[in-house]
Image (cartoon, rainbow, N blue to C red; front, side):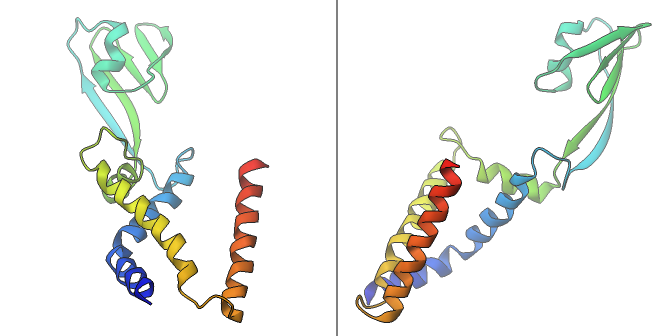
Length: 163
């Protein structure tokens, strides 16, 4: 019955981070839309000698591409750049501060300073999976029903993965 105690207190300890991962996971499902984003209009005056090729870097826009240039105005996705005056006007879509922090934590990579926390969390979730099979005495009807639900969940997972 020690497994129940470990399962219980680790669950209480990780309740906050599980809530963060649940919410940020939901937000990440909609990352290909503008859901949850706020739109900011940015006006920036760049030095007049800024090269068109350097414009994306100067504005901090990834995968920057000029669509067309007409009458001294460079048009790009969500904005314009006046070549003569150096003025760029564009919109930037960002998540609100807290949601942005949560999603960045959710998408952490090994190069991030707190990546070990993500690894600890993943190992803890795996512990929850495995320890759930020690929560009830084998041979009881509750344990048997639990195994049926586990098999159904495994079947659904395989279906989703391979279909």
